[in-house]
Image (cartoon, rainbow over all chains, first blue to last red; front, side, top):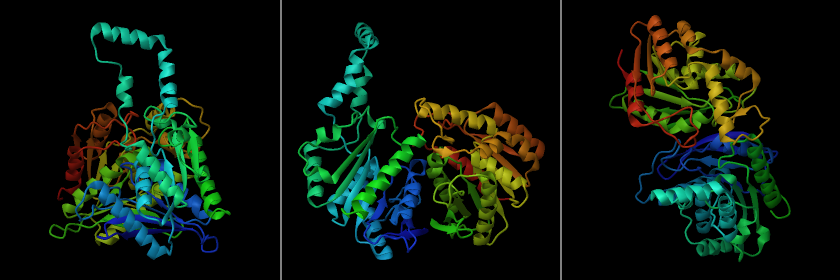
Length: 277
Length: 257
């Protein structure tokens, strides 16, 4: 395995690290895994998940490139105009173009947590070189099942009703349960995301969604929710969904993190190194 | 900012060099020693801001990741503390070589302060100035805080790993950390000047400031209020320090001799 520190980008403003398998082990069939920033964190990822995954994938013959979009981590902000999201997309495009030239790859799989998952999805819609996506706590929409699971335990608790009565008598604002539900990432309309996903699936892209208990208060709280959100998606074989209800959003528990990393590495092997690749 | 790797093959360290502003450049270098574990992640951007500030003031600055952390080689294992001390000495030589100077200041944040003091006390690195920023004063209390935060963060679930908040602390690393007391350690530190910058008024910082004054009569101690709370898990994944304390640390490092 070899790690290469890189400076690249239209203004040479971006920083990244490529993790390359030993030439004898490198799998020419496998796409390069492009690792995106999780929120404001730099490319190493929470609890070093991107570094550990990169080295694990290299052992299996798969190359990866983790980098910071402009303004994050060790990358400077680009000089061109445009909003944050436009610049982020331009930076991801720079990373793909750079990796294509430098490491002779023409297919990519994005890996991202939270906003990294959102950016990977948006980028995949615009660039057919992206043949797969690994989305950790990616987009989600509350379903009837979500509300049922979220509210039922609360409605059965006497303390909740007593609290509500107390607030009513004191003329205080309503319980914060509703307020907490209103704080979500902006995923847009469900129908639009469903159409976008269908476009990706029709194109032959393969997707792995991993959801954690860390977003259970916001939008995802049971194992089958993905298919309740996107009932119309076909064929389903190209999409894998895993649910880690005990894990927090950043996989702090060593057991959760290990399980997630194994899930991702196995999914890559099955989808891009096996018969399906 | 120039990212690069340095050190021996197989044990490479990731570093970022901040070149000085050419209009203010001087032959002085600063080595920044980052915290470890979750605090490394949550302070990464603040360390970048500090490095930019210092480079704008004309200093050569190096940030780097210890072995087993960030983008550097390896994973946390046995004798990790010895590796980290070696890494600090290596990084100090690297920035002095890049800047072509022996005029070095070292700044350590949180556990990075403890590691920096340990490395300097062993004699291979001799900075003119040592600045400690919200340092971990007693390794034992630090581990107790991490343990308590870890249990809260994972919701009290059983955990048979040796991790605390996502980083391994093998037995020997815990043992060394538990034995370290910065107030005792700085008596052996070979530096000409010393400054302490803290975001809170705490008894252990007062003890450290007193020990520093016994060692360096001119030792400076600054308190700059900052909302960062190292013992809280609230906002733990994205907390950053604010401008005033970063500027105070920069001023402590960049002052002319």
